Length: 217
Ligand SMILES: O=C(O)COP(=O)(O)O
Image (cartoon, rainbow, N blue to C red):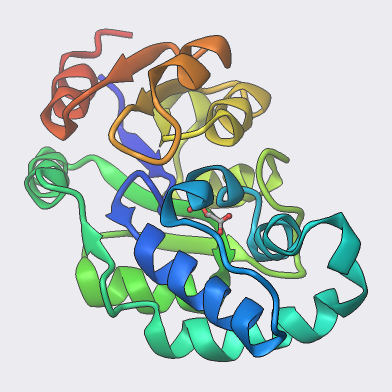
């Protein structure tokens, strides 16, 4: 049986799209630029805040990227828990996994301090470690952040699943030589996860529990 799960955050554990989109659109408004529909942000999120802002600005406005990033950090820090909630079934799943002594970690491209703020608020005392984007290591899909999480969990890569909603997550798990579970309720959907080569693709959180607890490897 597997002994640990490494979870992506945005689009996997929590639906954070509205807060990310509203904060980014607020930055665009401050700079008198056109805003984007909420649905566009499904594709903008996943490679960290810098990439999110680059995508929202478009290639013709990258000269103001640093300014916009500073504005985003201020606005999003204040609003990151306005609408952000766990997806239905996630809290039950995490409780089931914990009850079976599965060690849990969050591995996200969201800025580290905000990942901690959101996860500790929505899932207190649930995760052994929460790792977000910081200058100490590259963002996903580079596997270094996974190696740090596994060391903290004191688990080997074959003992854990990497679970996420995007090709970045599946690629991260692949590069770390782990089995991967793609989730379809997040920002990207089944096709992207299958194309990325996910070992499993699930439509409901409880299915993760079934895969992890029935694992015979
Ligand atoms: O900020 C992002 O790019 C999204 O972070 P994620 O790794 O939790 O999907």
